[in-house]
Image (cartoon, rainbow, N blue to C red; front, side):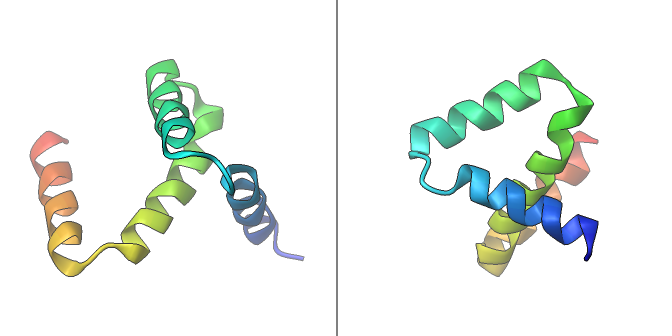
Length: 69
């Protein structure tokens, strides 16, 4: 069994059904806490956002990242 897949699926299952406000609070809290343990969850969230974003939005995200790193 692939551990990475299990973790990814567990994270997705954990956030399913959350309201938009709950999702935003989860993201903001994860970023503000600067804890390493939240990084996998943020990575999965970004993966979902990226795979469902149109090419213009993806380009905007890459430009934003490039300008701020």
